Length: 442
Image (tube, rainbow, N blue to C red):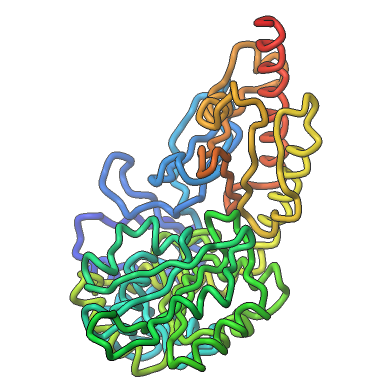
């Protein structure tokens, strides 16, 4: 195998030129050596983690997902988790400028956008750095006047976790409908929230209905196609637009056994994350009509989202959309395996609604109030006394104490079925240890 090493201090264009010249010269299988371990680098792929003697390099930390398992007996080494998924893309990417457009073959970002638009069944798409920025841009384009109003679910990510950006940066007011346990909301309540009095100067003007699919806080629930159809009918009746925060809409499509375009035909625009279960290092695709995307380009620029050399990131996005969607079914299956173990655990310390486990997100509860979700997560993340003797190794599982006294775990590209069974062993161990502690205290 030929081996090449390229200095990281090269300008990106020079580096790209040298890599291409080297590939043409050798015309064979090649390997690009990693950067020096202590030098700055691109962010690793979010959610790709180590297991069995490795440690996670997920810079998002342990606070959002079941991030990994590692053996405490082995030396722990930080792994470069980008691997083939990112590095092979970097070498073959056309750098491109996300601000200046381009054509296929000269700008990988353009190729990614065309792929996404075709997959979504929409006229155009735009590569955005983050999902939060993508949702904000959608609101800014749909709501052209300050004081316009959007209708959002009261438990939606856009409403709770995006710092009120619609009001803070776009001058757009929000009103909420109550999210039901399956992520939907009552259509009569939706209609009641529409400002029918416009242009009465007392009221804002309703412009946009926002949906979330799958629904994060409600445990990865998939919005039924009939519900989406009914929401779109309401929007059409009152002249409103529908935007979907579809950060995990690919999970919804896999769960329902339909292409994403079947879901998105009921929306005007969508935001789809590349860096969750799809495993890209960064990025979100915003899809919609061509004139909408044209205005979105201007909003992206004003928010600082225009990127130089974006082709490096777009290449990983192409791989995510092309090869990573089908494997989401593995995450769903592993989440259900773990959920069943939660339900069957002896002693019965946990509870879970199996009907609500539809995709890769699991929410469950600890039944004994003396063990709080935070304490439970701490126990799962630590190697306790006697654990290695009982399990044969130390296992650390990172979860998150979530809303309503629940615990949240998320499956992704870096968690295998074997890892899931290790997590189940740890779950049962924590239950046994807590039961013994409780019995001694009585």
